[in-house]
Length: 486
Image (cartoon, rainbow, N blue to C red):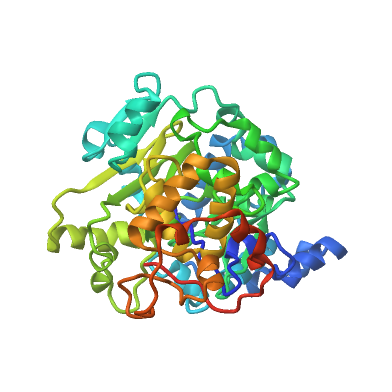
């Protein structure tokens, strides 16, 4: 999927989980005051929040005309009360978004968000949209959901870990007609959704009506990106999960065993302005993902897991003081990687509305929104990737893995036995069993950190009824940090 970070804190809780807890940080006092006291827009001077656009009158006129075209394109002209009367971003939205941008990227001055003035010269995005699939799709298959069975997909794409573009999955989804900017802003205008994180990992939120206005009028090189997890648990917007169905290839998900309240975040609603995107990354815990575009076009680059991080990130090609957000990566860094690195096989394509992308676990990917987009994405674990996911989870998310394997034994004994067999093959002792047996963790017979006198039988890796009854693991307050996997 696109950029998803689920690194646990010292208590084993992810940033996305903290978002749903009581420790969520208030994003701006201004937004709270706005709700409580109804602060008037006139109380905010636009000169206080303006950046020097360095535009000629002709450029300013052309930009405003393009905004009117955009408003009409997306049917927002039907709801004029959500559109600024003078056809430019209001002082209120400037104030809120400036505050969020400061917290989202403290190292970047506000003027740095518009350093390259890419909004004046981003016609290359339209060129990518208009390029035929025959030439824009490099080294990926395009298949139709009606032509490939679940078992065929498993053997050809899932198990070997090969990305693919799927047509037809969303053909009968209500989301294809209901998820549009005009209807979403009318129905969920006051819903606060995540558009970034501060340096401590706390979510930065903005009302949807303000974000849509920002989407229309921003001039940032790499704009804020609405990336809301756990929408099924958000009271005001959770009903939208009924508007789509998980494609048939991805309906088995072994992480469901944990329950929706304790499994890692896995579902995201994405609303992206033109030029926004996610930097090059791999998804957490080796999970695979699917991503369906409802509105708009996305440009993707993928690298197989065999490529080193230093190569795919291309940090050495980033000039001093330059940015490395998605648009900078596509425009400046990626061309140099292709020119200077030994890239045997490149994977590129443009994802169009209604298309679903399958991203295998451990694949590097970078995504750029070529126009205004709405998408849904989910991460999952099934029989095609379970071995990889389990090996990552038991170490990187040790407490979650303990809960998971216990649930496996209770609900899916065959899956439990598979997890135990993997542990035996790897000589890996689960964290709670290691504590009970007073064995240093992570335990490995070949590890220098383990006592040479320790010798465990196959039985020691199992969960007996006595083990489960007597370990008070879940009630302990573990202070040590989780092991982070690269």
